[in-house]
Amino acid sequence: MNKISYIYNDLASLEKEMKEKSLSNIVVVLKHERKYDKWQDAIDEAAQILKDELKTFEMLLKFFPEDTYFKTDFRMLVQSAFQHSFKSTRYNFKQQFVIENE
Figure 1 (cartoon, rainbow, N blue to C red):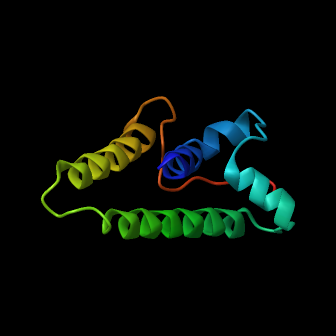
Figure 2 (figure 1 turned 180 degrees about the horizontal axis):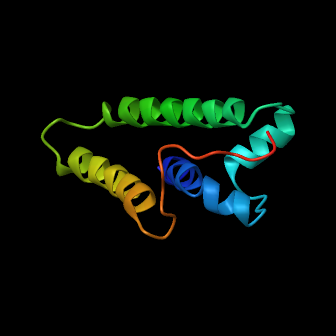
């Protein structure tokens, strides 16, 4: 679940961290390491990693009995991580923004 939270956070904070020239964002790291010409390629890969992690998370939950609160609670934790990252005023997340010098 930590990977999911980190990727949510990195996607939501990308614009802010690019302005700060931060190097600790998964999108920035992917663009540099994969030598992508376009930021969108790095964003797409980060989104795919997130999707894969979410699928793995759901698959692991199948190993627990249906009647437990465990599944519901963990899904709520993942949803809370999303809400915190994308709805927090900390990053002022926008669904679209222009990346200069692409």
